[in-house]
Image (cartoon, rainbow, N blue to C red; front, side):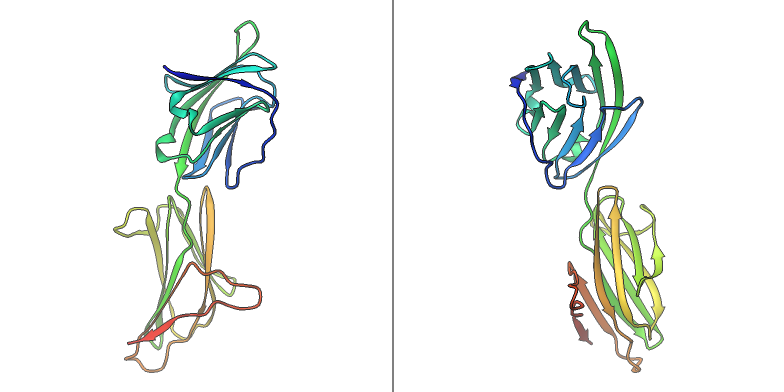
Length: 247
C-alpha cells in the first residue's frame, strides 16, 4: 500500500463550515458517526497528544501516526488528496461521499507498542435535505390538499399552521416519488383555513424550512387554485408572496 509521509508541526485551523465531527478521543466502546454528503468530516482522535495511532477501514490502513512531538504521519494515497492531519489530534476528510460509509477501526498504542485503545466505528454518510417545496390545491370550497416535498436521505417532515402542529412524520413513513431521494407528505385540510403554513424538513445531518400563506378556497366549486413555492425563506418584515394561477 502506498502512503504519503509528512512531518506535522503545531497548526491551528478553523472548523470548516458545515463540518461534522466523529469524536474518538474519549470513546470507550463502539461508535456510530454521521457525515453530510459533500461536506467535511473531522475525526477527533487523540485530544491533541500525538500518540502512536492508526485508523483503518476494514483491513486497509488510512492513517498511521508514529511519534510524539514532530509526529511522522502516513496517509494512504487513496485519501491523501482530500485529507489532512493536524497536531491537535484531528484528521479531516474533505467532501465526503457515499462510498465513505462503512466500518472503521481506530487504535492507539503506548510507547512500547502496547494497545491502549481500540474503537470500532460505523460511519454513515447521509445526503442533506433540500429546501422544501410546498403546494396548496383547492379541491372544493370545503376541502384543500397541501403537500410538501424535499430531497435527501431519511427525511422527516413537520407541518404547522400558525405554529399549530398539523402532522409530523418519521423517516421512512413518507410517500416516495419515482425520483430517488425525493420524499413528500400530503394532507387534506378544510377549504376555508388560512394562515402561515410552515413545512420543516430535517434529517440527522441538516434541516430546512419553507413558509407560505395559506389562502381560503373560493366559493366556486368548479374553480381550482394551485399554488407552489420553492426555496423561499421569509424576512422579518414581510411574508413570501404566494404565486397563484386559476384554471
